[in-house]
Length: 261
Image 1 (cartoon, rainbow, N blue to C red):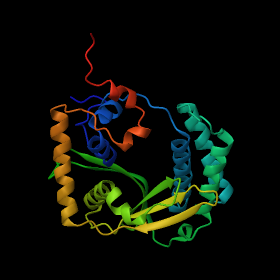
Image 2: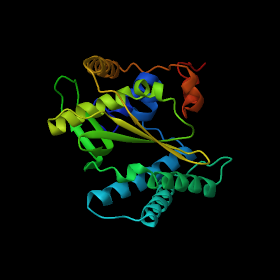
Image 3: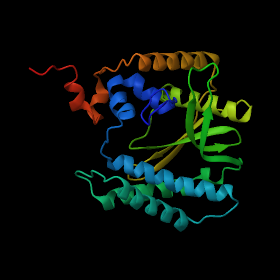
């Protein structure tokens, strides 16, 4: 019988990445499900995604949403998210963060990507693949599916180095490949990342990734085995590194293994 925090109930790209980055952080975040503060960047990203979801769902339904419609969906989502989880604005102001997200969303609405002629086949599509060659169920939510191509939106603070992106997001894109192939019975198209760069003058960058190959599929399977075996043995230990700088659990991790006198 599973519990809400059971790490073996299913796998996802975010669970795999968290586990492989730092097993102790994974334990705090995914197993114990300890609360973490909502940062301004996370708040902006979630609200922008909500605006994009409203846009693409309307277009999927054959409607013609206006820019004010989408910006209203963004603003309503921003407020609703604040009611769910308070935002730790720190040195930033709510008004500036709200404006940053709106400016970034407008950049997408004014880009050529809005008129992409490929038919929409899914928006925030929840997909689940039952165990076969993978040890436990695999799940994922794809931001947008056009034809049979998975598209993921990333809100970022600076222009990404596209040479590194295929490797940085390999787990996520391989996960989407397996989920879409299982759901449709077809080989998915080359995954796409759409970066919404939150600079003073926002930019929208579409990046098509190479096709998923057999080496990546085999590597993904091996990593899922590592995930399952590690959780079965409850091997949760810290992995100190640069990622600790922005981790909400770094104080807990520093105390790991200490024995009271």
